[in-house]
Image (cartoon, rainbow over all chains, first blue to last red):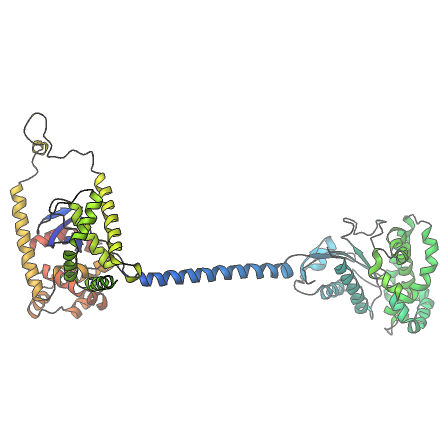
Length: 346
Length: 241
């Protein structure tokens, strides 16, 4: 770039560049009118250092604020994630369809997965995320009933997988009570609750491990409390056992199921325990299952009772495998503590 | 302490007024010289060492850039002078190891420069320079009538390329309409509204660079062919963009 020297002062010169800029530069022995190259131009030094300092302070402040905000968001976001979004525990609901519910720390459902074909079918078009575990369970049971997976005398088992024993008991009790009362007027089903966490890979409850606690619907506590009321009912039901199974329209299934369970029992090599315990349970169970049935007016006739005995049997018969734990444990007060233990205490 | 405050007051005054700055430099020339001497390791010779001019322009920058928040003025100026001298020295270092044309070539008495084929008359250069100087003197005399000095123009010159282009556009418009220029010279008033209407440049932009525009428009009037010739090539390229 060429510059014309326009004006010379003692301490500086004014130059005109080719683009029409007038600039100040060091007067390096220049003469007016001269064309020069490579002058030492005066630089623009912004004098607004005060403003600069303010700007710097402001920047510092906003920067710090932003960093703090980011930290807060991170901390709270993490907490929110942990309590609401991250899977903390899971419940495997199996009727015949098997559905896994992943729960967050609060116990709300975050994800539902069908773990077998029927489970996938059951979940088709259903969105349970964000609902409470009980609501989802109830809705799924409704769906299962609608779709014909669950009917009179069916069995629902929950395998609860949670890192926290207390949580397991809480969920187990809640689910059992919730489902029992929910279905009270309509169906009688067996409810089994197992803790999948204690022995991994053994949620099937077949394992003879003591930890599995298949809790048959028959809540002995109900039994104890409602003895007065239920007795007649139970007597009715027990009386109705056989007739109902034939009479009730739904009874075809119980009938079909009933055989299956005995068979399972049959297959399972029942230890000596079984017979001995059988009598002890037998009286208890009819009455316990009754509560679910009697409230409903149709119950007596509807074959709940009819189911009762098979169910009771099944519960009892499964003992060789799992129930043995449940029954044995009331005394041993082992893992079954959550439900049965307390019942017994009552 | 009192001196210190007085000096910073003077510096603040000199920020606005280039003449005051010149005076301040005159007063502090010994200081500048001593700073340069510290750097060179020997006293600088006036009219011979470029370093002294650099130090002076650095002092100007110090005046422009000074604020009370930066502490005392003189240490600040000293720092600036030193850094500018270092910059200059680095820039010059690039040419080190290059022979001067003045060194004798071989056994001949002739200097090296004389052995090169001449690229034009020196006389012509001098004539050219004198003609340019005459134009410039004429221009600054005319500008004085408008109450504008070349230093003012330099202060008022747009820094941003975009603004510069806008001013050039206005100038081009004026050059295309000689009647505007005639009116401008006669009334000594910038035809701002005509300019912004004609060139579609924002009035605010033009108003901010009034003094610069005065210089530009004057250059467009008759009699400044050489200066225009200096600008022309770029102006054409600039307007073509």
